[in-house]
Length: 337
Picture 1 (cartoon, rainbow, N blue to C red):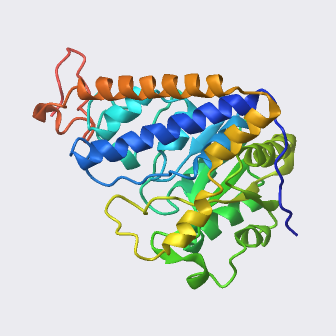
Picture 2: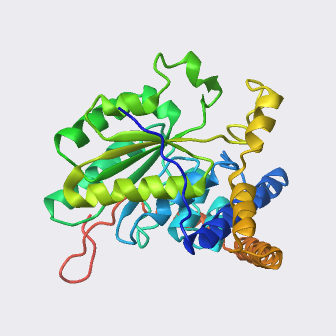
């Protein structure tokens, strides 16, 4: 049985969550500009409209927890604490990027914040999350691993294998499904006979429920509830966050599979104005506060772009670095052949 989690006033944390969502939105809007002029190359998947999912879940985690994300992970990385400059430099292929410019948009990584991707393969992060959680359990560490994936991952074998193992082994994993209704370019209703994805998780005897993924306070409340249960020994939990991306699947996608009126309808539930208007009405935030916040974010984005543009392109001589392991040194300091 599943239940819909509803939003509630979270207090002071709501202003911080609003700022995080604005940071992610402005960052990705600037990415569109940079991509259009050729400063960012390769694939670029934007999560504009889905910010509440990354921010709400991350707010419920501790710094020692782990996060595993998909290829649409700029927001998760920023919410987790990666510097905007390091993420932008990665997108521009600079050595100063969080993956030394070798991963690009789909392969952000940062060990200090326990952010383990950025994984380009659909459902590819699920086995990694189960492995991290298994290691924590075997070592007696009270950690939670949050694993983000899209509705398209539900059709992959890894999804079923990983939920089954997590349930059997009672692992501390929070499975976070960002259901935006379209696995790349195909509607969920055309690919899944059961479109209530939380029911699929429940079939593995995992506590699961759906939540409004356009309401960051509802997401945080649901994630906090799940994380508390996991830490208390409740085993894996599953959240189906029902959300929507306002832009196409990627910058290469002509987006011909959705009706414009559907997109406009979902924009009426944009998580950023929804929260800002609520905070203004509650007296938690003033119009001047909001302007100041947006100006500070714009300045941060400008600084990130400047940092990336002044970054370093890795020299050709380093092409094989990290590809092969150097031969061990002899006692006299030489190298064995």
